[in-house]
Amino acid sequence: MIEQVKINEAMKNLLYRIADDELIIGHRNSEWTGLGPILEEDIAFSSIAQDQIGHAVALYSLLHEQFAEPNPDAIAFGRSESQFHSSQFAELPSGDYAFSLVRHFLFDHAESLRYSMLTESSFAPLAALAKKIKGELKYHVLHADLWVEKLSKGTEESHARMQSALNEALTYAYGMFEPSQYEELLIEQGIFGGERTLQQKWMEAILPIIERANLTLPMISGIDPIFGGRSGYHSDYLQPLLDEMSEVYRMDPSATW
Image 1: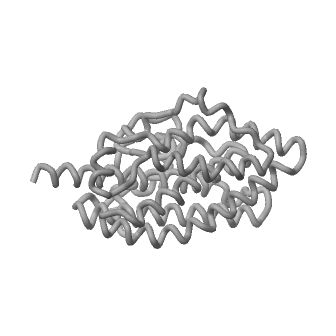
Image 2 (image 1 turned 30 degrees about the vertical axis):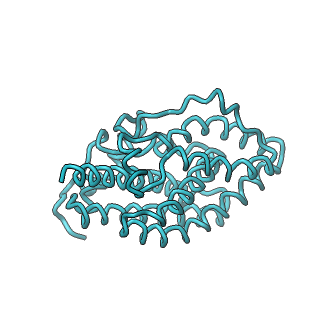
Image 3 (image 1 turned 90 degrees about the horizontal axis):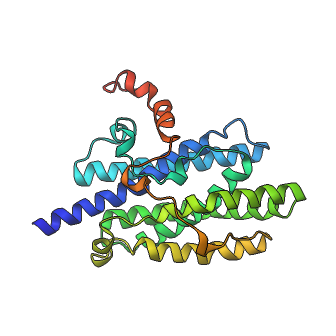
């Protein structure tokens, strides 16, 4: 019984980490709606944001149905900042288009690989959901790869902006792979293959695209990952975003729309 309690806690923690990342970065990406540099990208980022928030809802629904956690709306809008398990990478402001695009590239490659790993999870409901989401993420990755290469090979200015964005983003991006206290248990139980394995797969996936785009990866050995978000320690940017996200919900949490 004690072992099963620990396994349940490990699965809940994993689901919250993934879902919170999806919710927060989905809201960040939605900030480009109506502001994209061209109409095509305005629509693309809006669609990506909608997918990501939809993924968060599906994961919150698993938490509600499988572990008796609150309903998805209450999870998304009713928690305090310290109860969120999103990486600090997801909560950073959208910045200029170069930064948002580089974050999209780094984040969606990681998520695509994460869900690919989760299709083999021993937790059957999560494996089934991962198989569905994996297909959607294929298009996110294709979009990111196309535009990273296109802008990096554009003008001197566009190349410089993309390189600067990559330099700024990478330290935070490594925070996506912050291990949890349940890491070994998740691996032993076949629930998830682990953050270290995911990070290795991610680096193998992004490096050829970065090189093809004539960008330079900052010295990996000198990177000090920005951890803390997975444990509820966030940047100054998350609380204002949560206030904005939950403004209507907090007027009357019992209301239905």
